[in-house]
Image (tube, rainbow, N blue to C red; front, top):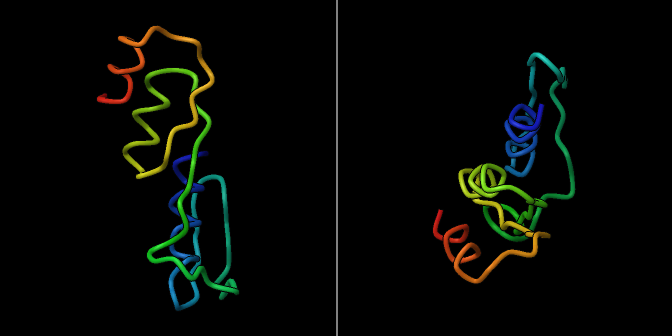
Length: 81
């Protein structure tokens, strides 16, 4: 569901209208306004508590908000992952 939501939301930031027809969401053509001033969109962040979630945030270009207490070495490894 998360992957499909990202695929549906990102086109809404562009100048034209957008639509999405997927497994979980069916959004008819709409022009969502106001559009973001920052291009291509404002910074987006994702709550993360596991390395796979941090990797998913990175794949989408999101910032990762970590809520785990880990060692400095583990945090370094997570950031570079």
